[in-house]
Image 1 (cartoon, rainbow, N blue to C red):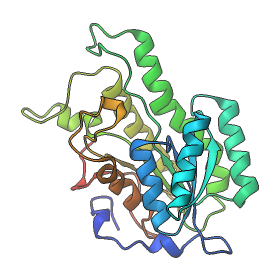
Image 2: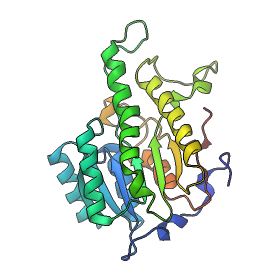
Image 3: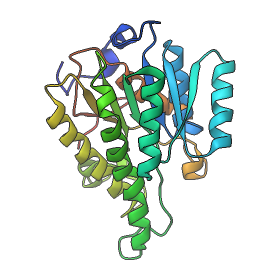
Image 4: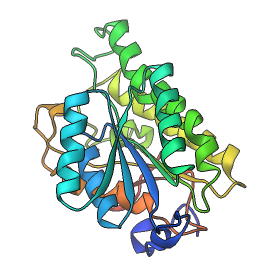
Length: 261
């Protein structure tokens, strides 16, 4: 399968690949205590997977795990601040002790950053914060968990991006690209570029890594102004997380298919 094919057309072969003795695929979703991340955990749990709920806030994380468990999901909490080296290292140790490997990593945690974000007005700290979480955080978590992913028979990495990071769309007259943003949008462009570089390095390893856009969902990230539900936004991540062996890698998707870089 090539990167220009639509993963929506593929079967969820990964639901039976790379599983533990009890038949469960092991996944970790960062920023999973609410919004799109929580719905990704719901969707992966519905596949019969064991899902780690990565989140900084102890109370929200425990509440999310409780809700998921009550709904029949094999969920477990993973204390995780993607901007903190020690926190990420501890999360990797927790997963290794619990499962011995990781099959799927969904890098969902992200921030929009404060206003204003016009490049002539944006505070440098706003840009730093967006890049630290949305880009460096993804690299930090991915690298810490790669040893565990390499132990999987069918490892998958999904980076939650946004079409506002598409330079093609940003430079297409009349295209809907959201507000001018030198922090959030630029950080997603950076994340897309990093995703491509990972795919190039890992191409011969069996690890599939792709970027996915959930669309403009109503979450606290945007003050609930979005027009899609978090459940709708989670769909692309669930598809990319469950790609079959030989599926695409180093590509960018939304619900309609391939997004141009």
